[in-house]
Image (cartoon, rainbow, N blue to C red; front, top):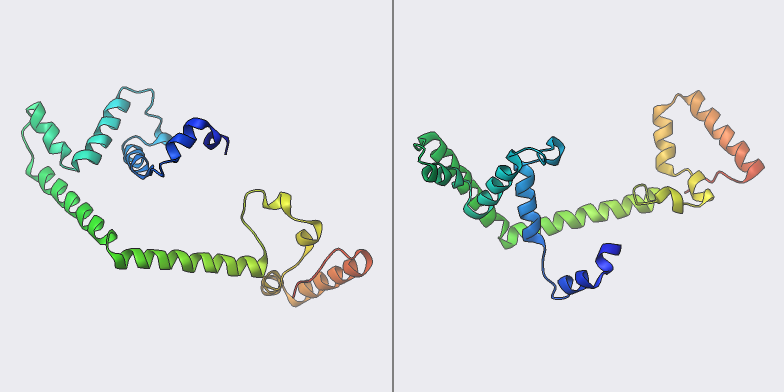
Length: 181
């Protein structure tokens, strides 16, 4: 959070500007020079970055334009492919800008959020930064109905009965294991 608390960051964020275009360019560069391949020290890094920026600015047809500037004979297959890719990109852009698409995307996000909330309500928070650090001892030892039914399905009747009897014994002697309803 500290990088966002500087005065310079506040000035950049104050006009409510968007960094979405920067993220889009960075994504394009990532397709041409992925970090996992470590192109940073090679000579091709600059060319890969230039190719990504050209693709971002000019579309996939930048390959044909670069070939023409270099005096290389054009290739019909390359032209056909780049036109098809540009056409697909334009179709996706148009589709994604419609109200119906945005409504459906918002609806899908809302359903996912509701499902996560429902599961967290039923089972407790399972994935969150520092989730193990913020849990109380009682919460950590609580067995939910979902976990209990999973245990029942994954074990034999004898194993399950042994577990329940051990949990009951522990609860009666130490009051540590709670079975949530």
